[in-house]
Image 1: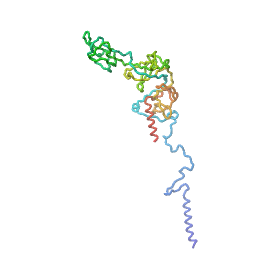
Image 2 (image 1 turned 180 degrees about the vertical axis):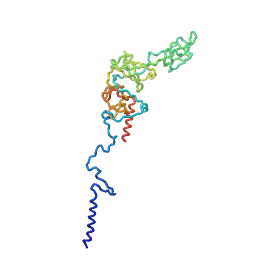
Image 3 (image 1 turned 90 degrees about the vertical axis):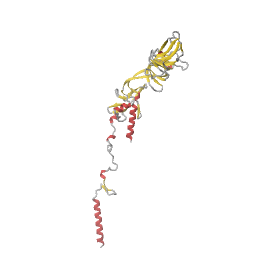
Image 4 (image 1 turned 45 degrees about the horizontal axis):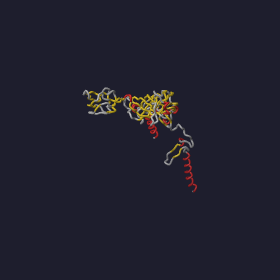
Length: 341
């Protein structure tokens, strides 16, 4: 009787083992009963293919690295280029100036100033101008009644310019004293203080670049006079520059600085100083290419404040951005910030 009871239990165990052996060793089920194929996974310690899983855009372009360009090109529409006021010029041979910096003040051109007096003593009957008025040559400034003839005659301006002094009013006597001073400010003098140690380096005829002390307008002139006498109060000489002032932007009394060109040397390749930008720790310029504007690191040499010698990184004819290059630097910075998110 005991043998009959054990046989069914033994049979059930054999059937259970047969069912388990029918499953392949590569497949197992998780707790929810889902099957997983282990053959599709990576074996333990297996190396991944570096190309696997990288998007096409993640690969760096070899061309950009070889050319030394910092990043991808910046593309601007014609309207954006115009709004940015970009000044683009080819890199080319140029001249680097050796300069001497001096300081001084703008003064009226003393050769273009006239004092106006009455031809005959008399009473001033009318005055038609005031200080600051612009007058033309021959224009009536006042009228005077002669004490002898009792005739009224006009007082004309001897030259075109600006009335800088008025010393009379109607009813006053006009005799030998100056009634008006008229100055032609179409040209002005810039008187620069020259210290004795630099006297031999400055000569009549040298070019001078003049700029207001606050970094405003710039204009070129020439030295027309170097004083042989020194001023005891400043222990300096005067170097005088004749400066064009047709637009009236150089007012007498302004303090200025002047860069006197005392020597020049040729350079094989130069770019404007405004083109230089510091990008990723290197001195760079933006070059216009068919793909857009690219930042290109360069090696620089001498500089005179306006132009910089380029020793490496550019070729003659490369279209370099001068004024407005900071706009491209800002645009590049925005693009890098966007890619970083």
